[in-house]
Image (cartoon, rainbow, N blue to C red; front, side):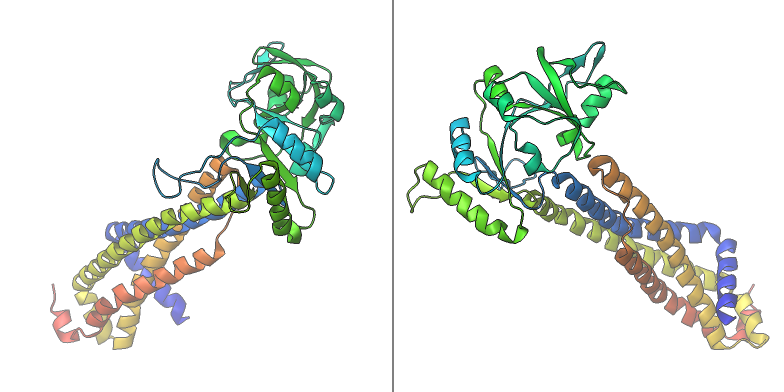
Length: 411
């Protein structure tokens, strides 16, 4: 009952000084929003990237001609290294030798600004064309919704056939069955042999916005394929590091490297990108926490001033309550509870804004699921409680020490 009485008195006092209390609540809400927003965004990004890069599976690694180091800015120690390109001959030789043990898939890029057209319907010029092989599905773990994936015959004969990503299919065919239809991709005709189920991924790299043709067909239309990527799938994740080492050894032999030579290619796990990106994001997290701490310090000072002003304005009320029998502890708890309630209201508002804002960012940019960072919600409440006690204790003690006789004379 005493708790409810203090709570009701605190709310009434806040209502009586709504403008001052409202400003303090808003400042506190900003600080908590910064904390919860960043944490929610990062958790959502993890969820979205995890789903996106599960396209290559956590049991998959890549061999390519450049490191996968992520770098913000043009310069720095972590600039990406480039090595001699991986040719189709090298990639095919590796696949022939290593593919008997583990599924190996080759991929090459046909550009990411292709426009796909069927009848009167066409996509924006932002479709990525991927040249690949018959093992792509077994390595990537995508699923075909209609038709089939590429076959060895498609590669051997360099057929003009294509498998469409979900978004491309929806844009061109709506409810019509696309299998067997002919589409135009950047002016060249291809027969649709299959479509993929919706995957969902990040930004422009979305698999749903890609089309897949035989890598041999891509070579015919683009003789300079650039550097290919070799993807290898390992069923047992515990063997992944050992298989990577074995694959590196095989590829070193193909490139005629001596034992003393460093690798002139890069091998990395498919989920290494996530760890690197999240590591880079940590600096954003630290910056947001610093901003939140500064904001909360400002909020603590503002709350202290608000409570001191409140004590001064309510001196007569304090004297009247003491004359009616209120003890020092009663007065102290009333003002202390008022400070705590102001902080908790600001905390609740900040938590709600942080969760909503963080999930909007992660959903629209990374297609992550809805995330509620319970640990940071608890921390937010504890931070608000601490700020409320620290900022409210001195004004509350000052109010408790007011002489009732002097207070009743106060006009």
